[in-house]
Length: 323
Image 1 (cartoon, one colour):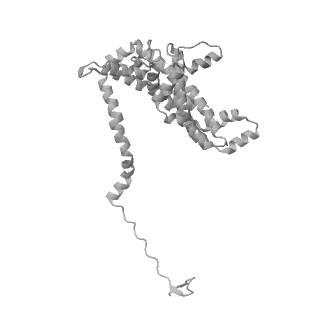
Image 2: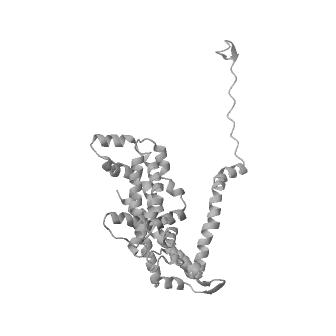
């Protein structure tokens, strides 16, 4: 018996066709399977190729050079870890390490706290918000050399604006380049001015994802702005905080241009007459490219690399456990 069905639009009946039997789905060809699985690796391959050429190879080659007595124009004998043992007994290296860590602390801590406050203010409803957000990016696009020259004038001993402001509150002039602490403060101010806006934007992007209901509930419970900042905002943007702490630590341990421009003179790479603000990067550059001791300079470079890894891991663990 033949069944019929009525077409709604035609008002006629037609015989129902029998359903075709289930046909087995064709198996993808080997080439198609290879393309499907290999395409993602192909897309990310350029990064790893560039990293291998410009990152991994120089790193390994520097390690190889650090194991030799390598002077300009000649490759000396294999000396093993002699360059590293010499480095541990070099007081100039420890002086550079203390300077670097000191300026890292003096620059990073206030920089991140100020960035958090600025981002919290930018997260409010204010007029001209786009202009304000773009304004804090201006220090990033400014040339580092220009920043160094301007701040060198501001912290000039005889005619600098910093000493002028101190004079207004009854404090005598400070020779900012002469002492360790004063030079650290001047260079840290330079670093803070340049990177606070960058970190503020990172915090601001993270704050945009925090639910507004949490702030409304906190306001109903009587929590003020400061309490909301540390009880709601900071815990909710912890991944962004971890990122900024790690990136600031790495940048601080590689500090080079700002103190070099601040030093001025033919011996600027020494970081002052008494090496009072010479960083590890400046010390490495001095040994490798002024004294042309590439083996010893490579050992310094590897020590900087290892110190960055250790301090980055320590910072990560501390920030992750902080509630």
